[in-house]
Length: 348
Ligand SMILES: *[C@@H]1O[C@H](CO)[C@@H](O)[C@H](O)[C@H]1NC(C)=O
Ligand SMILES: *[C@@H]1O[C@H](CO)[C@@H](O)[C@H](O)[C@H]1NC(C)=O
Ligand SMILES: *[C@@H]1O[C@H](CO)[C@@H](O)[C@H](O)[C@H]1NC(C)=O
Image (tube, rainbow, N blue to C red; front, side, top):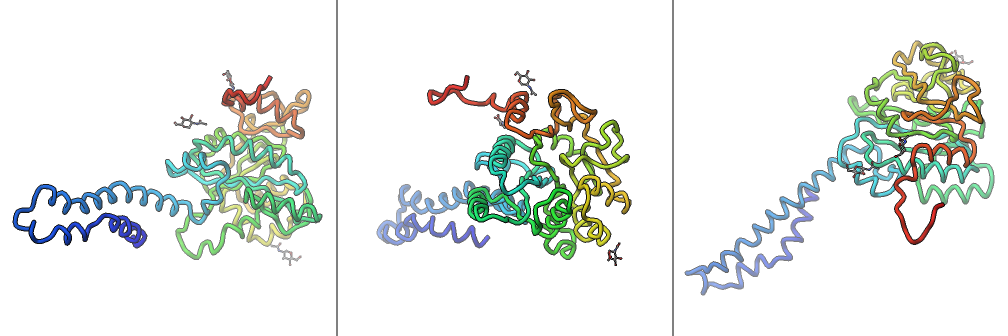
């Protein structure tokens, strides 16, 4: 409110309010002309104008900022266009996608950023994508990674040494709980920063629209979502979700961050381990198997029940280990269909 006042006052003082009253002097006073009346009323029209057109925007902006806290606006990935389209409605839920990768994979991050950013328009959920790796260990990384952070601000460096099955996933989830959790619980009723947290591989193509559609009706608590392992099973309670990409609700992330039993058992085959933590503690009562919409790229032909050809309602495709595989996949999903014609390039 104070903000509104301080913005309105300088504006109305541009208009000669006092001049209108004092300069048109007493001689006019006995028979106030139409013009004088208009002049007298002008400030009020102006105030009304400001009130009608400036305030609603202020309110929208403020409620938007409030609804985005504690996630700062800077956490948006993608262009400012994507930002504005996403302001139009309150998101159904908030999803953090942590892509577990290695510092040296600059080119893959470049591709992933493009692929995620091009899908950010018109989403009904708030999605943040972060690239996650362990401590830097080379001098070039200590310059090149900061460049990326300065430009994109979407990197999380965990306190670990680079590894695959030596607890990186544990470090990831427990760090996320710490980094975003803050003093959670203490301020009763405060919304968690995210409803869901995903662990994704860097060779995984995620189709955000389909993923969000399938997550929307899911419970926001005690939820474990992914592609069931073993490959020939469709029962989400059988074993665990494939490490290609799985999603936990925020309460489970917090629990991983605080459980001593989990900390004691943090190293091992990462996806199997996550399933084991949940099973031992009797957690993850709400589960969803996204197969066959999550699958491995068939190289060159399907090798097991986890891999098959592209399907239209795909949520995610895994094992995109080189650019040709990404290109094949993005082509199938019409990623370049929106390219505008121009005299500056020919693509054929
Ligand atoms: C987003 O929605 C707007 C308005 O409904 C539409 O014009 C635009 O094509 C949509 N963009 C995408 C990428 O779907
Ligand atoms: C974790 O490990 C420590 C040390 O080995 C042990 O004292 C403790 O009881 C364990 N906690 C749980 C919950 O298993
Ligand atoms: C890609 O575009 C073609 C032609 O418009 C369409 O038939 C096909 O269904 C689209 N594919 C997907 C996965 O949306």
